[in-house]
Length: 348
Image (cartoon, rainbow, N blue to C red):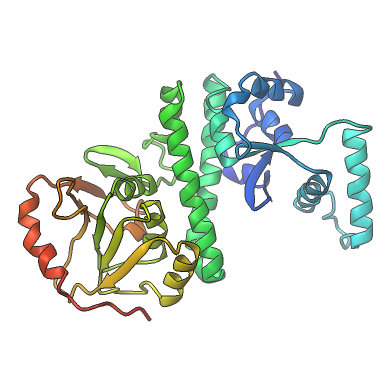
């Protein structure tokens, strides 16, 4: 193995993450360097476990895609950024073409890239203390990029934000499925359940006494619903809707809210409805008398479940919070019955 590259700062990794085919990816050569492997040996390790790497985890770039990656790589390094002005487009293209030829030469195969899910799957293939440390840095980099998407809402349009948020939720759901089925669960648990590192921003909450990634906790509750979902929460937002995409199209969803603060806008709902027209969703007011948040699944049926939530789902994971399933559900029935009589909530 080669000397391991130090990546204590996630900023180092962010420069190695590119967007190809609408998803964030990392080059096989960069990942090999991070883990201290020759690229050929790194890829051989992957081939030895190829059944773990589906097409949405790892794919080969086309020549045009690799040229774009090279251009992005060079523009964020000293390749084009010097004391003088950058080269014009023709010169840039010529330099990239030369670099592509010199680096790969002849008929050598184009590189492979790994999506976020693929990077997580690498953790089950590359073992050892050093690999675990490098994997932590990779997890942090992708996590911080997700945080940036949510925190930068005012900088991008509603449609773009919805699309990015939906992809983020899908990624976390896919990662949860990977963690549930892989053999080396203990190895990954060391990475994602480390609450002792104060430098790492986590998006976890406590669900019935266990730490769970916030998005996965909410999505899991909604996904289990067979008949209906009632959400009682005065503070709702775009993320509230995004998490609901995991619900079955046959489930009727009602959000009870006075939509306090910046709130949910009609354009948010319209974008979500256009993206997921099969999701049945409506709104009613809470009429100013509710402080706590609740999720009621399959109300008044044999499958009924009620959860008391410490924070709004739109803020899930930003602060320490807890979701607890209640046992004495009958106590809450008069509350729900009264809410069902409330007037419809109109979004602005």
